[in-house]
Image (cartoon, rainbow, N blue to C red):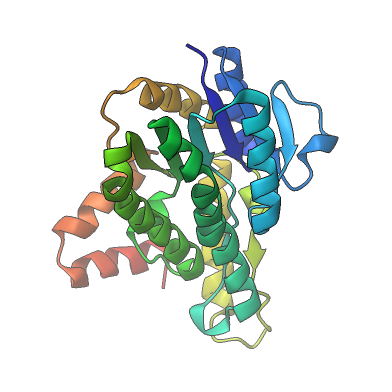
Length: 266
């Protein structure tokens, strides 16, 4: 039976790929972003800024009036940032949290009343494997995604009795536009961090450009939607990325951190 699905951040990349896949599967998909209605897509498009609470409510009411319900919310809108913790501009740090964390929260809060009323629903938050570790020069991004994970875990407990399920997906490096849109701290030439940061930033870019294809996520989400019992977390990435999470759990901190420093030549 076709489901009504709302996907944020669907103008390009991962969100668009998921929206296209689920549309091809026969679902009624609404993809949103701040300027998506200017674009030609295979799915319904809706202008929605996850940083604007009123805009979110207007968009969700539009879907509810047109379809009567929303079965699945996929929070995909996100923003990345790279730079030393000491040099992170507070305004940029706030912008990342406003999109990744508060944007996710705003959309969840706007959708939940209708899901509770219909006694069913599924919320999928797109997180990152980076949520599992504070990686060098990605502290802001890692922190925001870790917040999404903990928020989702709490949400699972709170809404289970209403017939609503929630989970998060942790992608590893994925070929999307995140490199182009990432906020990057501009360091002066005499910065003590510049040499290491520039070298690390190249590795960050490569992890995306050489990452997995976004095509893997549509089938996964379709599988989650059909699951009677949704797992807390789904991790998708290269073997080394997933193995690194296990290493952090198993190795003594000193050895794990030495491996990370060696990898980034720090």
